[in-house]
Image (cartoon, rainbow, N blue to C red; front, side):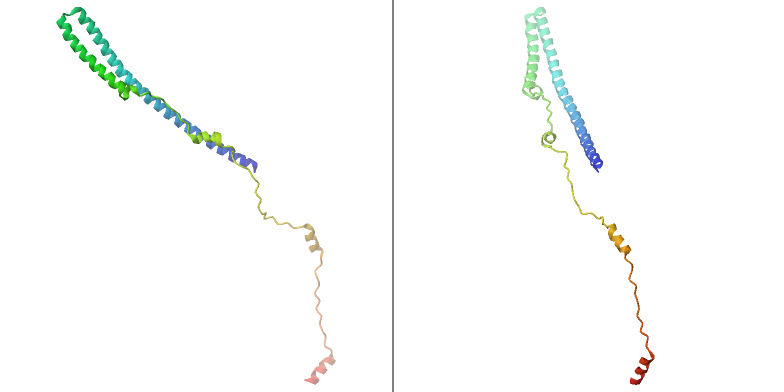
Length: 176
């Protein structure tokens, strides 16, 4: 009896562990997917900012080149063109900083379900054990009672027969 109950408890424990393992795997998979999404968003913003940085560096190089080798008129016209590119880039960066692309700080948060925490804190017993009583269907018979019945000899039935005598026969005839 005990081994059957122990086997049931072990089976339940196995099923609970298997279920928790599956939930853990699912949570880890979800965590990895969210991490990839965060990385992609960060890489996309960084790539865009790097492109703009490259463009600003080219504008600076052009400005230095124009300043060294061009006339005043050429410098003025070249500066106008560089200023327009720089303004566009500045507006883009400002909109990126104000908009969602850069201003959102990405935090990867993992929350454990309260139900799982309650298992640790709230579960005090695996189950309970008790003794139940119920009426039995076993009938008891005493050997002594059987012996007494076997030793008693059965009663003999005797039949008494009355034999009519001849005189009684005659008397009966007279009255009839």
